[in-house]
Length: 202
Image (cartoon, rainbow, N blue to C red; front, side, top):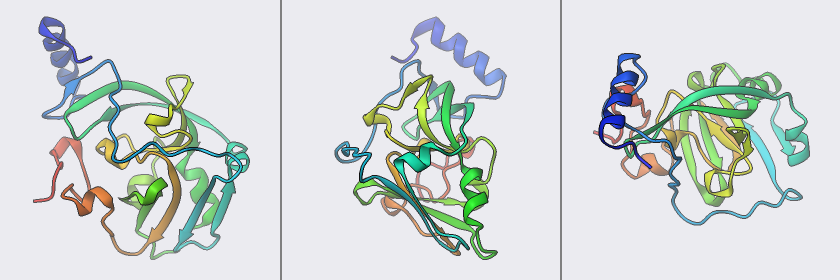
């Protein structure tokens, strides 16, 4: 639940003084569930992750192959466009750079269209994914992701609003030009910087 009263004001003051709470955001201890459509069913026998587009070595990984990749752990904050923030989330998964090293993006690749279950997509510049804190997460705070929060695989991009941290990821398509994803086609900002309150397109 959201902090209330003096506790909420004190915590927000503390976080703001440390420069950790973006403008217009409120702190929460819980992790609200927000998504469009139904929660997809996961079948480890048929699931795969595909990396396509402007890469030298396209990739297709089964669930077992993905889980055999080296793992990392990273702690970061999480900022939802609906104005709540949750601090110090511990993520476990595979570094995005681990995939980059395998597929070798072509020089003209500048953007990625993230594909998820049920046709959902989101666009992110390649430069924003080629960062040490960006990962494809399977666990949150020491527990496997729940289905509602994106199990089995969720992209985590901590410095952008959380709709860019796509749930139920199934593909990464490398592109030369920026292409709006589902929410971007429906009025959300193309980039989504919480520090600039880039919530919606202007």
